[in-house]
Length: 262
Image (cartoon, rainbow, N blue to C red):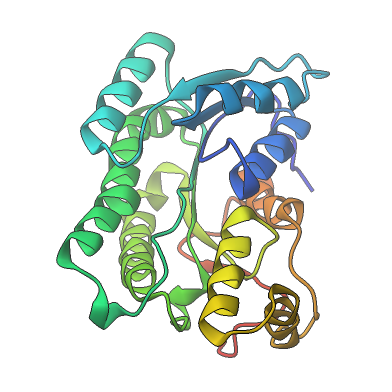
């Protein structure tokens, strides 16, 4: 099976921590040249120092605030014009704040739409030309299992994640003839800072300890544990590889079986 990424270049968003960092580490391990992209340059430099260079890879850092869509557009367009395109794009951004949909302000939906869909779209439009030229492209969107089964208490996130999933499926239909695949990988409960925040919020709301809230979350997962970020990264890296060339337009849950629908 060909999962060798030597000679391939990957742009990994939200790569200063958590799932994004794990994806960057795994892609570099498989031989890719990785560009880390988020708003925190100091954190990105630390991650860059961890990336594998044993296969001659070179890595770099790109900085923008994804809540500022025009900044993202300018930074990526200038970067591509100066240094060329990419073979792999991992779209990944921290999720909206938890809370019920009916209590959310309109601005929360607009901000989340810009953060998750508009910024993603700017990146895709900047990278598509070089992918078409190479007849190779892998666009992977880190979304959520809520695109299959909405999650309680994540009203804004459920709404926006669904929009991103439909956008991605549309792109998959449009870009397949150019050798470009577009897939969504759906993390379940993954041991990251975001999960810690969600559990803490549930503990406060239910007036229980964080330990009990953690046990409650694990109890609804068939595997009875949270995912490690590197387990999610392995799935994303496979979809980025040549071996996954005929897989496109899918939603792949990496959730230990938590999602109850097919």
